[in-house]
Length: 440
Image (cartoon, rainbow, N blue to C red):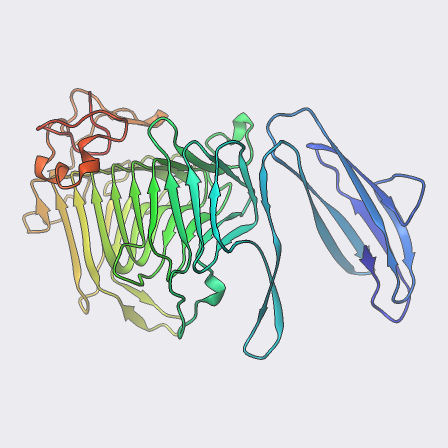
């Protein structure tokens, strides 16, 4: 229904935008004619008009959601309504109304899909997200092995409700996410465009964001690809990491693979590759641990000016004041940090706060002027080619000539039982390889 809430009649032109995804049709105000363009429809004062819409999808197997718009031109004013129709059989998580009262007593409507209980997504059908999903306080989302999650443009998941977070309040147990993939049956997150052109195209959706107050999050055997930011974790609340990632691949993000904002993140056996800015940004301090991870940035969509890794312990507020946040620890054990820039680590240090980092038995690409004869570097291989099998094709396994072969510290490997096996399932022996992928 289209409403004229004015005290006078109006005339409006109505156009249904065409779509190559299917045939959309429109019938306006009871007319027997079906047309996609109405000129000068009169709607009387405080009256309304009915618009009936119909869609017949085409035969393309590459779409989960069909979208278009109805455009209203009334004088110099243009308005639009988005049309969203399901195409293939799936679970659809679509925007809904959520009403909040602000400090002035005003009712504000935020549109998102709310998960307000302990919820499980299974792999029997795909899950399609249109807009934002918010996992509310004291609620959780568990995603079972083999589940495929498709995001429409600009869509994403908020683990925790950001609307409830302010300077004086951070909800406890502000949502949690548990991803239970397994080797060969990973949980996949990607855009909802399935034709070949979009197969590896970055920036098709938003991010998985962990809001302050979110706790007990774990991601196991996931593939997160073709979005803007893969994982974003904000400030730590509580005595446990915000999120633990194990055996997870993050690739082709238009901005950042993993972004920590004064957060606490741990990762084991993870591969993060080909991002438009950073594969990993440990920003505004925090606490981080990465073991047997590979960070490889050979971004080729346009020029990349930022190294693969960022370590930072401050920020500048809106008034131009520098605010420091200590980098409690950024530990890299048995990791590969590589890419096609002359240096792949950026150190942004403010002397007013702790800036603790350690590269332990890592293969790492650094500025040749960087001093590595310090406690920050322990038995590292500096500025040697990791000799990946075919990095341009996304294969970051090691060839037999790689200096990372048999060069890892076995004590790091045995520190976590999950590290006894590499990302691809190969068992690590007493002479493990550096990086996420163990050679057979």
